[in-house]
Image 1 (tube, rainbow, N blue to C red):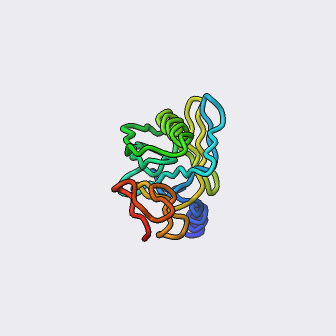
Image 2 (cartoon, helix red, strand yellow):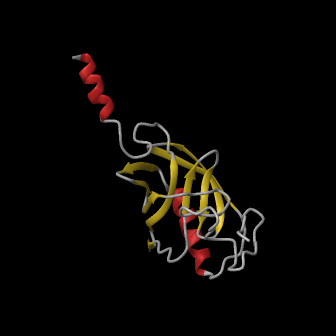
Image 3 (spheres, rainbow, N blue to C red):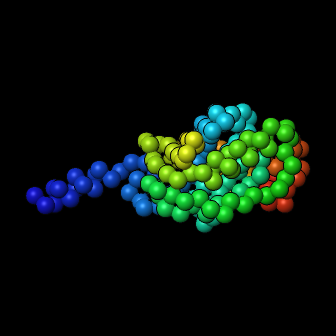
Amino acid sequence: MAAAIAVLALAGCAGSPGETEDSLEGNWVLTSGSDAAGALEVGDATVTLGFNETTGGTAACNGYTAQIVGGPGTVSVRQITQTEMACVPASRMEIEQRYLAALGEVNRAEYEGSELVLTGPDVELRFGEGVAAVSGTFVPGDPDTPVTGCDDKGAQDDAEVVCPQ
């Protein structure tokens, strides 16, 4: 009887990344977000968050890192740093500023199905599973396709970004 209960208990632990962990993990892509100013429309920009050796990702243009302590459940976000590339179009800078400000307000992290949801006062950031890299690139299944940092000829405009040739 005890063995059957143990098997049932373990079966209930399967699911999304981190459901059985006391820390956050995985690589995520922002699918929707909002702050006190309203919806965070990223358009064709990509915002990522990865929990690897370093926590961070791409904030619409620049790479960033952050210290996120705790979670799932209560979290604290500290020490957000970013690279300082200029972004074109300028709207990416606004997206980036709003995202990083919202990330700094986060105090809860929860897994909801296959999503990671970060919330705080007037903030909700929803992420779907993806491939994130702290180097400032997002690679949706193809390691030779960076989203930011390279022009259409493969020219590198930030030393952290490796562009395809």
